[in-house]
Length: 231
Image 1 (cartoon, rainbow, N blue to C red):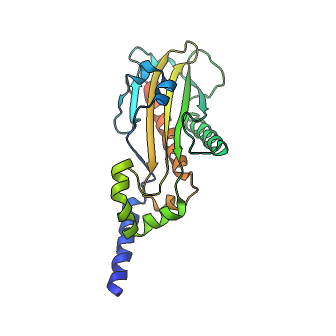
Image 2 (tube, rainbow, N blue to C red):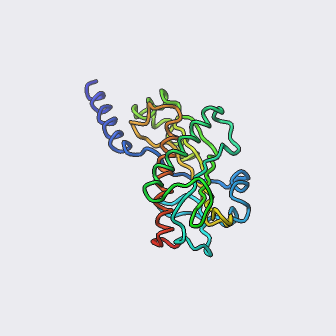
């Protein structure tokens, strides 16, 4: 019996080491009418798979001149085609996304509230958000036997851990004066196997996804407007 407990403890320790840093994971995105409504059919039809560190699907206008932009406007809009979160929960996530983007982008650009020369308009739509089940998820993450029972089918179906949440969002970046679309993107992230995330607020996985997106937006946009990245 002692050896059984020792083995169980070892399994939990290994699981914590392996999954402790996996806060969220990027997963497959399927193009839906809601995405195309937001981005526009022209952009939607040109989306291609992103590389590591980029959105799952993206398009950059080859005719744009990104280095002329040095200021940003930010607008996070309400949900498109999702009823999994209540109106209050939706507004909480929208407000959080607005703040997260502002905080990250403010380290690289002046944030403005009106169109003008050199101003990029960044519009983001939260397309979907799924709550986690914190108590049950904690068991699935910490107890290897329970985790293994659900992991195979869950990962094969959605690329995520059992009982975790997640979110999907789309970005449209335009010239604030002319409305020319400069880039579009879609990404989806789901909860990983992080022990620290297991017992969090039920929308914590969506919050973690937003944090990752805010950093990605700031990094990719700055690389684009500074001329370090061409597409």
